[in-house]
Image 1 (cartoon, helix red, strand yellow):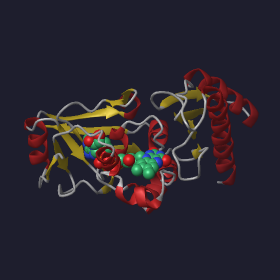
Image 2 (spheres, rainbow, N blue to C red):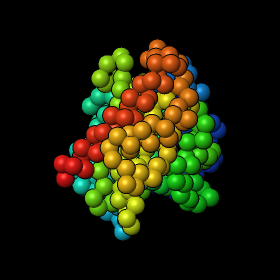
Image 3 (cartoon, rainbow, N blue to C red):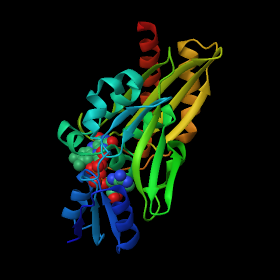
Image 4 (cartoon, rainbow, N blue to C red):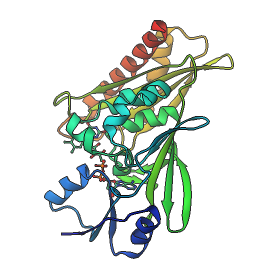
Length: 280
Ligand SMILES: Cc1cc2nc3c(=O)[nH]c(=O)nc-3n(C[C@H](O)[C@H](O)[C@H](O)COP(=O)(O)OP(=O)(O)OC[C@H]3O[C@@H](n4cnc5c(N)ncnc54)[C@H](O)[C@@H]3O)c2cc1C
């Protein structure tokens, strides 16, 4: 069994990550506990962030909000500030698993987990969020659009931990929606998912699409839909998404099934975002 360390501040956490053999950050533990039970966790030391102050704050910034890495997913779903500033994020976090997982899992642990099927990255990609990282050598920021590197591989380097995610506010007049399609049950991982954000700025209309569970890493594409009506926007979205879809077959669907379902998720997300805009 790995040894559990419980640092009392960020400097101590970073020192432990730099000096211990085979260390692993312990966030909410929902993914780590499963790996432990399956005998698949090979870390010698777990660095638990539960007692590090300041990691559960949700703060307003000049451009949006900054969410501490240990913030439970459930708070992203229920917090009024999150719902007001980034409604797409609030809607997407509310689709992760079930309330029990969402109460325990953390925002930092969620993206660090790096699973290609995760719900939240789709919204974070569309919203152009940034990940704040810290190590004994200092701090850096990585755009979420560069964060997912390869299958189960993220930009988090050895000795680093995520301290926060910064999410720019949804532009005024924007409209959004998140669609998750699961073949094994409502609370299960998605077989396909899509987050759509329609933004009108400086006379141009852009559709930003985050796509999940359909390739080894979450995908992002931005489409200029200026002057388009709903039907041409849907067609443009599907045409842009199609080349990004490279499904991994599993118990939740074959390549053919997921490819077709992926385009259904994209179409549904665009139609719902369009309706969201009409309703405002
Ligand atoms: C039953 C079940 C169903 C699920 N269904 C879904 C689903 O439908 N959609 C979905 O999106 N997800 C789903 N998940 C995955 C869930 O979202 C993740 O398990 C969870 O978000 C991980 O967060 P955590 O804080 O518990 O991470 P942990 O289990 O603590 O850690 C996960 C990974 O992240 C690393 N890590 C943790 N915190 C940090 C940090 N601050 N900095 C750097 N690295 C860190 C750990 O070292 C580890 O590698 C499901 C999980 C379960 C158990």
